[in-house]
Every structure is written in structure tokens, then in C-alpha cells.
Length: 418
Image (cartoon, rainbow, N blue to C red):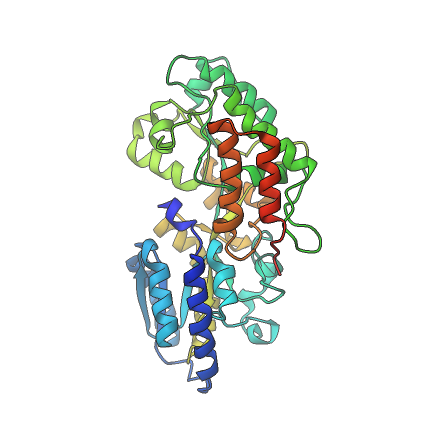
């Protein structure tokens, strides 16, 4: 599921959206309707029923009816493209951060500047986690969404297996992780130390950030040709050179962790929940730890979803009232209790009850230094794909490192966040 979620709209879909929404924007001249009118909200995945329950207090307080429509993750592109073409979209919608740039470019989202948000104090950028608030997810300087749920990546480790291998604490640096992974891989055939997802590109970017580097220049251009990225490639390829990671593309991350074949993984809170649900016998034998640090810091990925207001909604006031309700700390904590998805509001993230779970405490602490992937149009489809092509070619097919990276730099160097 996460692989599907992280995909970005195919270029043809983006183009279709841009054309369709251009027409929508041109016809969007109807006055804002009364805030008491009904709202349609699109939420992604299978959480529609839970979300409908969540907003009942909002309806009771305001009298605004909310119709929740759950959109399967693999139907998002089709659903939105159809809505744009027909001009019949929702009022409020959930947007995965990997899709935010595409929909902003298409004009699907209502700009949410300071004047628009006046009177909705819960929507102030200062209320949200810094890694995703305000300018952190602005597109060309325009804020078009409000943080909703947080997600990040940490290190999950099997404490029983590490201890049995003489490793008393989880690795605190990437160098330590590589050394520990080599020890763990020495347990025998089919045993590894770490799992590298061959289908997801954030890991080498995270390693670059942890080395103090950036992948975007101050002018907004994509640039991986830096010493910090080169050091990240050393770590990434070194794990394969040490035979510490599986090379088969169909290796199952969760099962590999449960069986112990890969006792350390780079993953999100969803993995912790999956292990707790499917392998309760491992309770007390695994834990989460902060992501290892590079030469500069422990910096992870800030993922998750934001909420936006449809560009041609006829109920802007009601939509903003709903967003204001959803940004209340108590609402965010209620959603965590119902869905397991982390809040995005600081007051909720620091709530003592939320942080009673030591693993959740690791997640919320990691968010303090987590960063959003650059909001380059079709980042996953262009930069992410080329990055994986280069690195997987080196570690799996034995391609020449220098020429592979040179090609990668050439293919991505002309891209920009502007």
C-alpha cells in the first residue's frame, strides 16, 4: 500500500488535470455559499467511516453536514481527473504530500494565504510541526494546504537478535549501522542485517540530509552532485558490498523483520503496527530507535497527508471551519486513537498521553528534524526513478558508479522547484 501511496501522478494525468482545472477556474465565479451548507470531504484509503465519526462533533456544533467519501489509494488519480474534467469536486480533500505539487500546479487547490485564514486561529502555521508547516509545503511561495497527519521513518530493530549477536544498543550512526549489519548478516545463509527498499528513493536522500547536504540548491535547482550525496552513496552501496542486505526485489519488509531475516529496517510507524498486530509473540523483542545520524545529524523523511480546499468550492467558509476543527489538538488526538495516524499539530505531538508509548515517543521526536521531499513536479516519477535506476544499477547489475551517477546528474540537473 505504501508503494502505491508514494506514487506521483503520471505526467499524462497531470497534464489532464492542468487542462481541466484551467477550465474549472475560469468558470468558478459563483459567490461563496453560506457556511451552513453541506460539505463533501474526500479522504484517502479505507478510513471513511472513522472520519465520519470524527466530524460528528463539528456537525453538532456548527450544523454543517459533512459527507465523507473514501477514495481507494489506487483510484485517486482517476477520481480526481474525472472531478476536474467535470468540475464536480469535493469541498475538502486529503492530499498525500507526494501529490501536493501536482495538484497545486493544476490549480486544484484554493490558496490559503493569511487573509484567507484570518479568523481560523488553529490554522496558523506556528501550530504545526515545523517540517511540514507553512513555507515547508508552500508551492512557489503559495500555501495551498494545511497539515493533517504526520508520518516519518525511523530505525526498527529486533532487540533479541541484536543482543544475541553481541550488539547491545541500536546503531546511532550510519557507520555503526553498516558495521552492525555486517555482523548480523554473518548469522548464516538467508540472514541479513538491514533491509533497503529497492522501490523507494527517500533513503539515499535522507542519508544525504544526515550528512549535512541538500539536494536542492539555494536557487531551487535539483543538485545531487555534492560530497554529502557521494558519502550517502558510499553507505548505500557499501551495505550491498558487505552482503548485508537482500538483493531480491520481492523481499517482504514486514515478514523479513518478523522472521528475523532482516532484523533492522528503515520504515514508518505502519511497520510497528503491522508487527504488533500480526506477531504479538514478538512483544518486547523489537523496538523503534531514532534514525542513525550521518556526519551532521539524524534527519528523516517527513511524510503524511495535508488537507486542501477545492479551488472552486462553493462553501469556502464551511470548508475552513472544518479545517479549523480538524486542527484542534483534541481532534488530532481523537484521530490518532481511531486510526493510528500521528498528529501534525505540535500541541498534540507533545501530549504526554500520546508519548507514553516509547515507540510513539521515538516517532514524535524524529519529526522534530524530519524534512519533506522537495516539491519538484513529479519528484517520484522523475528524480526518484532516475535515482533508483542509478543506484540499483550499481549495486544489483554491477554498473559503473561514476558513469551511472554522471547520467543521473545530467537527467535531473535541469529540474527545479520553480
